[in-house]
Length: 420
Image (cartoon, one colour):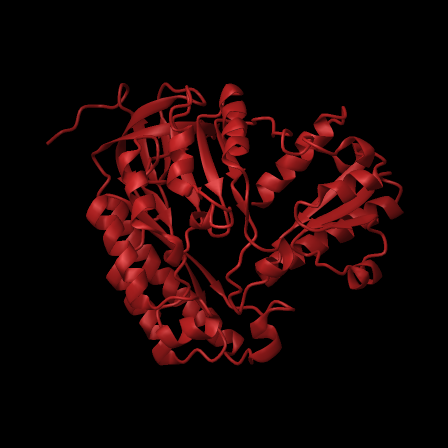
């Protein structure tokens, strides 16, 4: 989402003739787009801000510093006190204030932002379709920073995707904190994610449609059927479960029980047996016992996710958990539990990926690094390969080796015949 926000701001600046530069010392404006979903991300943002301030003190640059994103809340007095060298603070998507600080605000009304689309930089692109979140999980700062769920109009989204495809994009990822909530805030007839995907499906040269992130309670059979029935929509789901214990899910205020999560996974696999499903896990949440943690390990063994994004809980100031719960799991216990999840994930991911060895997979070529091309399967598996290819092409790759993290191979036209 932050990538998409940065590209949106850049698109607006492009319309006024501003040019991007890779070197801060050459810039008139440096924007630090922050994430504070984890403590480590906040520390990186603060470190970057400090290095920029040091450059200015040493006379190595003469630029304005703008800090935007989830570090910035409704009140920025404390941020101004802590970081007096920052020229402007902007909440997520509050681009107007940034332009006002640059003397450009008078020209950004009406249809300026709805029609400011990012310039494509490759064959893939992110497209936000719904901003904010209404869930208010106890550990999460996002609803306090990005606000309530607000869907973009379907026409505006399809127009943006058409613009991107015209510029060479072949795959779009539709974004939302809870992407299946798209349309629920509309009045009258309310299109859902399935309707939106269908509306853009026949755009010429668009090859793939992805979406994330899913919230179990918003996933309807109709939406899952759309994923199954629309050929350009890939069979990939990122569904954060966060924990394997119902009591912990209740403390997190996730809004569902494990049996409901299992029902959605079972429904997906009944419709699309080869679908790839990934998830997010938090270890060491407030009050997590050894038995509760073991329930998470049990869940991983039962569901066998293709990939698990795991993080140790860190309190976020302003959240319900930070205000009302005790962060009582010791750091060393959190670390051990995180490693335990990583070990289970590595084993299961390796076993699942091994099934691809010897198969031919359709890969959208995204780039080249160290003489090897890279791209992803429809199921979102990272693939590194050699052979004849070009960025933006879709090629057949014979998978010759697999690990827990990626697949390796050769384009089918260049691969040696299999020796059986």
